[in-house]
Amino acid sequence: MMLKYEIKKVFSRTGGKISLFLLVFLLLLTCYFATSISYVNEKGESENGYRAVQKLRQAKKEWAGLLDDEKLRAVLTENARINAMPEGQAENNVTLSNITYGRKQGFSDISSLISHAFADGFREYDYYKADSLCAEQAGNFYPNRIRLLRDWLYDEAKDQFSETEKTWIIAQYEALETPYIYDYSDGWQQLFEFSPTIIMITMLVLGYLVSGIFSNEFSLKADSVFYSSVYGRNKAVSAKVKAGICITTTLYFIMILLYTVIVLLYLGADSMNHPIQISWKNWKTFYNLTFGQEYLLIVMGGYIGCLFISLLTMFISAKTKSSILAVIVPFILVFLPSFVSFFQSSVVNKILGLLPDRLLQISTAINYFDLYSIGQTVVPAIPILFLLYGILSIALMPVIYLEYKQKQLG
Image 1 (cartoon, rainbow, N blue to C red):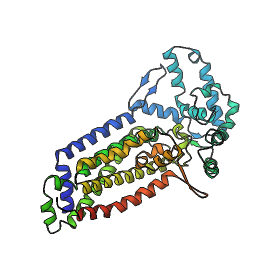
Image 2: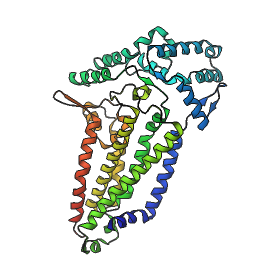
Image 3: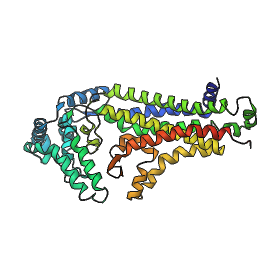
C-alpha cells in the first residue's frame, strides 16, 4: 500500500505527467530517425518508407552467406563492372552517380568492410578504396585486419598500451572466427546507433521523476508528520526506496522494449547470431560478439547505469532535502565527460573509461580500446563497468534508507 502511494505521488504531480508525455514523444521521434532508411531505385531516385526498406533488405540478402575469398572476389568484380558502365564513368552528374550508387547497394556493406581492410592505416578510411582494388587481392581481406592493428599498436599507439595489452588485443583479433557470415543487419545497426539517445533520454526523465521522492516531504513542510507517524522511519522510508527502484526499472524496460519492437519490426532482426564485425562501425572492435549479444549488453548496461544514477539522485535528494540539487546529478554524469574528453591524456582516458555514462552508451563503448591491467591480467572496460556499478547500486540502497531514516527535522 505504501509503495503504491509513493509511486502514485510521483505521477500525480503535473511535472510527472508532463515527463511521461515527453518520454513518449521523444521515443516516437527517436524511432522515426532510427527507421529512416532510403533506397535508391534504378532511376537514381531515393525512395523512403517500408517498401524502400524491403527493397534494400532484398538487395543485401542477395549477397548473404559466407564472406570468403570467393564472395569478396565477386564483390570486387561486380564493383568494377558497375564502374565501367557509362553511368559509372560520368562525372559531376548527380543523377548518374546516384544510379551507380543504387546498383551497388546490395554489397555496400561488404564494400565498406573492404575499404577498412585495405586502408592505408588502422585509423584511415577511404570510401572509394574498393574501386582501386582487383579481385586477386581478396585473399588479403582478413590478414589485413590484423596487420593494420599490429602496425598501429607498434607505431602510432606504441606508448598507449603495455606489451601485455598489445598482445591481448592482437589475440582478441586472432580469436575471431573467420570467414564471417554476412547478412542484412540494418535493423540491428540502426537499433544500436540510436540506443544511447533513447537510454540517455530515459535516464534524464527518470532523474527528474525520482529526484523528489525524498525531498518532497521537506519542501511541502510535511516532514514532521511523516517522521512522527507509526511507520515513518522504517516502512515508509523503505517504500520510498522501493518506489524509486520500481519506477526506474519499469519505465526503463518499457522504453527499451517499445524501442526494440518498433525498430526491429520495421527494419528486421536478421543477423542476430552473426558477428558484429560485419558492420563497418564495429570492424575494429576487439569484443567478439554477435548482434544478439551486443543487444543484451546494451540493455543490461543501460539498466545498471540508469539504476545507479537514479539511486545516486535519490541519495542526494535525501541528503540535501533538495530536488533541484538532486536533478542536476544525471545531467552532470551524462554530459560532463564530453567536456572532460577534450583534455586528452592516458590518465584522463582511464578515468573516462570507467564513468557511468559509458554504461548508457555501450554501443559506442565497445569500439573504444579501454583496457585495465593488473600484472599480466588484462580486463576491458565493459566487464569492470558492469561489476563496479552493479555493486555500487546495491550498496546505495541501504545507504539511502539509513540516510533518510536518521534525518533530523529541520
